[in-house]
Amino acid sequence: MRRTWRFQVQDEGGRRLTVLMGAKNRLRSGRVAAWADRAGSEGFRAHLAAAGLPGPYLAYAFGRRVYPVAREVAEETGGGVLGPRGEQVAPRVSEG
Image (cartoon, rainbow, N blue to C red; front, side):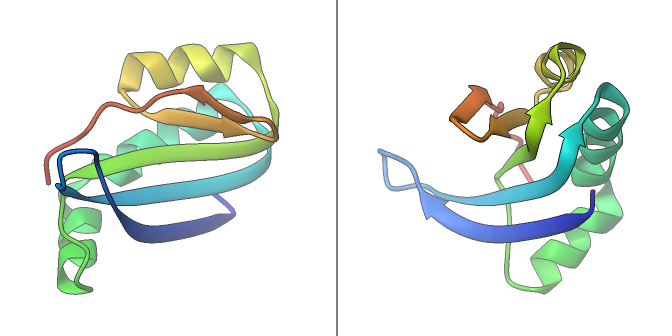
């Protein structure tokens, strides 16, 4: 992903979640798969935890142009997809 953002939110039950978001202008299936691999890697999560951002995680990929197959890959990998008009695929919560 060209850019990566990380921040914390709270769900309806008060549980703290860390949101991970990668962004590309054109979001294709390969980018979504690569982002899912990176967001799920133990090394990346250890880096996040060391920076004070523990799991559980919600991983999103954002694109100004989202190709349909990118949404399919996101659904398969558990990642979320955001486009210019909002959420296109909701991510599954991934325990850290």
